[in-house]
Image 1 (tube, rainbow, N blue to C red):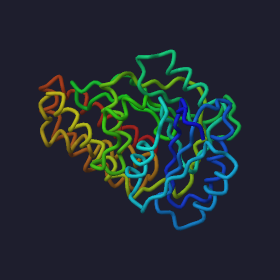
Image 2: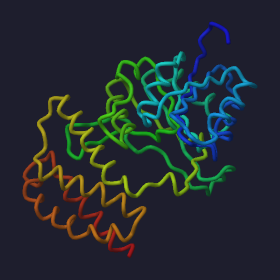
Image 3: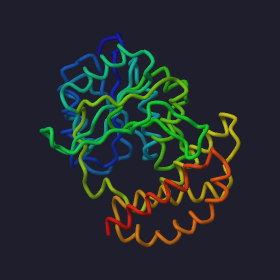
Length: 308
């Protein structure tokens, strides 16, 4: 490898990802854009992942392997960031596939939009997408607004983003404080450095499988996300929302997640969510800052009733 730093560092954390790892790595090595390094962090794998990594590294010097004792996703991402030399850092997971033009498109986008700190795109549920394919993007907000509650937060899909390395380092990388929501916390903090863009371009085949959907982590993830928002609100100088408002909002987030993945759990939550609506409505309606919350709760409840 030459001393010249590549333009892009692709970081891929892996813990026991042998099932799809070879395909994921190959999808990066086969990119039309070639000025990159791929940093794969072996986060204490005990399966065949290390053998796959080292075998593929023999054929392509752009693939760099870093091995560490298992420390979890945040530790692996920060380790990769410490080794990254590129101006831009792109995320990749061990079970997805990047489309061949992904890096070329995202580099060009960041070059042409200096106000953008993170660029995403669309994740597609098909290897060979058609106009009818299911697509997922980050969200509708391009700027984070912490003056209202619930806040409006600009996000993207974490496995497909490319970000400016200088901003990521200025933020201090990923934080351990928000288990299962380290990406959401990152997006909130990134808003201080620029816009988050999700152009309508297919960049990733997002593999959905049972091990990638953990119902058991939903509540912890959503509570971590709310804590990340409250931390950002406190740092912005806005006053903290009342505890009752926060708990109602947290229940709403959990409820909406369960509606998508577990009808039984969503049904079990209807009564607590309805009770939170009754408890918070007078306070919320008395303040413009919280006025959206009862409406959001009511809409979620009505939609839940219509789908069962």
